[in-house]
Amino acid sequence: HATRKEKILKAHPEVKQLMRHEPLTKYLVMLSVGAQVALSVFTLEWSWVAYLVVVYVVGATINHSLFLAIHELSHNLGFKKSEHNKLCGIIANLPIGIPYSITFKPYHMEHHRYQGEDGVDTDIPTALEAWLITKTSHSYLEHTVKKAVFMFFQIFAYAFRPMCVKPSLVPKDSWIALNWAVQIAFDLGMMYMFGIKVMLYFLLSTFFAGSIHPTAGHFIAEHYVMEGTAETYSYYGALNWLAYNVGYHNEHHDFPNIPWSNLPKLRKIAPEFYDDLPQCKSWPGAIFRYIFDDSISPLSRVKRSTLETNKSK
View 1 (cartoon, one colour):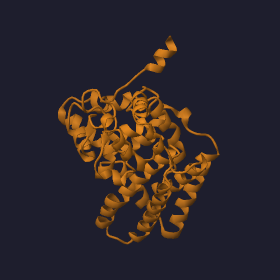
View 2 (cartoon, one colour):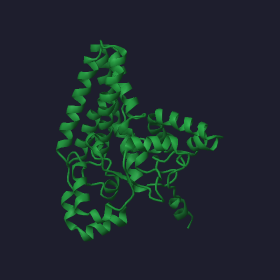
View 3 (cartoon, one colour):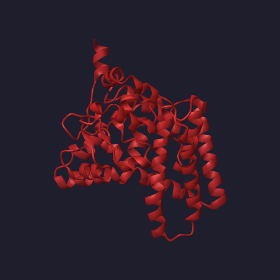
View 4 (cartoon, helix red, strand yellow):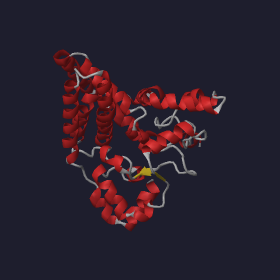
C-alpha cells in the first residue's frame, strides 16, 4: 500500500486535495442514532416475527453503518480535532449497546501499520480459530458447518480477539472511562424509560450486524485471499452507500487520511492503479464463498513475521 501510495502521489499530486475531514459524517451519525432510538421504542409492541424482521433488515444495517462511522472517526476524518472525532464516536456507539469506540482505535491503527503481521494485526484469525474450524475438520460437510457457525457468531470473534491477542493495547485513560460512562448511562436511561426490550433491540441489531448479514460480508471480502496472492480487495457495489464506502478498501489502505466521501474520487483520478486489481463483486457472495468453498478458511490470510525477523537481526 505504501509503495502504491507513493506512485499515485507522483503521478497524480492533485490527490492531496482529497485529504480532508468530511463534515457530513456527523450528520449521518446523528440521523442513524436517532433512527435507532426511535425504532427501539416504536417496535416495542410488535409481534416477534415483524420485530425480528425489522431488527435484521433495518436495525442491523444501521448499526453496521455505525460500526463504519466509528471506523471513519478513528482515522480523525469527521472533524479537524481528534477529541471531536472521539466524542462523535462515543455518540455513534450508543445504539450498539456495548462501549467500544475508544478501544477500537489503537487496534485498528495497528492493523494499518502492520497489516498481516502475525500476533500484531488482530484482524487475522488466531491459531486457535484455525484449529477449531479447519484443522480439526475431517470432511467437507464438517468444515462447511463450522465456517457457517463462525460466520453466524463472528461478531464475538471481532469483539474479543483483539483484547485476547494484545491486551496491552486496551486504552487506560479518561476517554475509555467516558465511553463506558456515557454508554452505561444511555443504556440504563433507555431501560428506565421504556423497559428492557429496548436494549434487546440494540443488542440484536449489533449481533445481526456482525453475523450473516449482507453488509457484514466486508469482514471477509477485505483481506481473505480469494484470488492468487492479493491480500486486499475492493468492492464497488451499491452496499457502499450504507457503509461509508468501506468497500473502497485498497484505496482506504493506500490513503487512510482520505475520507469515505472522496474514495470514489481517488479511484476516478487514478484508475490505472486500481481497475486491474482483483475485486470483490459481492459482499453476500463473499460470505457464501467463505462458507461453501472448502479452499477458503481462517488460514486464508497473508501472515508475516517481519517484526520478529527484524528483532533477531
